[in-house]
Length: 140
Image (tube, rainbow, N blue to C red; front, top):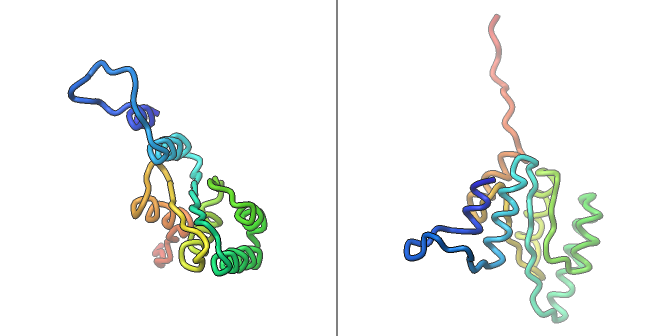
C-alpha cells in the first residue's frame, strides 16, 4: 500500500513537505494495479481512434474473434467501446490482450498489472497466465 501512496505522491526534492501532486491517468492506473496486485487483477486501457469504415470493420472482426474465444463479456464491452477493462483472471486477460494487440487495427491497448506497465507488466501477466509446472522426474 505504501508503494501505491508513493506513486500518487512522489517526493519532490524542491518541496519535501508538499501536500498536493499533479497526476496523469497512467499514474492513477499504475497505483490502482499496485493496490490490487495480490488479487492478480489486470487492467487493459483501450484506445479507440476515430473510426472510419476500415477500423469499424476491424473492430467488428475483433469482437467476433473474442466471442469465438469464449470471451463474450470482453467482446460486448469492446463493442460498446469501454475504455478500461479490469480482469480477475490472468489467463483471460492475457488472451484478450494478445487478441487486441496483435489482431486489431481498430484499437490500441495498454496493459497495467501489479503496479507495472509496458514490458514489466507483460512479463508478470504472462508468468501468471502460464505458470511453469515442475515436470522433472522425482527420485525416491
